Image (cartoon, rainbow, N blue to C red; front, side, top):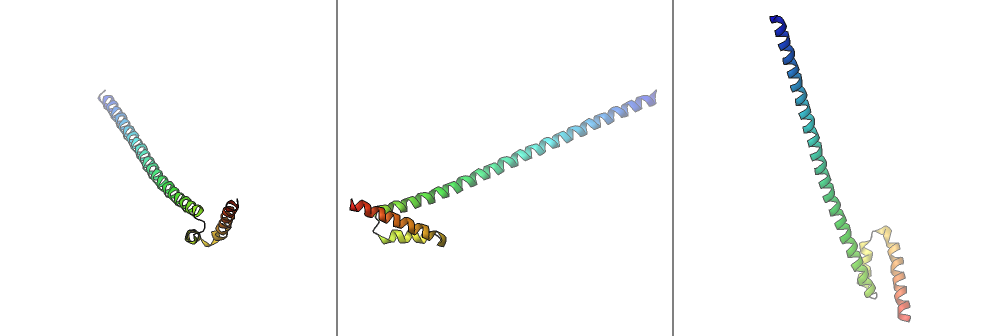
Length: 114
């Protein structure tokens, strides 16, 4: 009888140990999920900051180009604006810019002829 009680007690202890092990594994899984969520939030926040900075820089460059084009359209006879615009562009874009400059000069001459 005593042996049976001892075996039952050992069985209960092993079940409790197994439940404790499952609880520890569940807590570790929960910790892993929280770490993954934290990593996702950090990566998302860094990604948002990078996107905002890149979009801001692109918008500033676009506004600067628009301002230069506006200055060039307002004062088409001044050479310094067109020279400045040509030096801003890389070598492969110069023919396109020169064609655009000729089109603007032609349109301003047409406007002056009217």
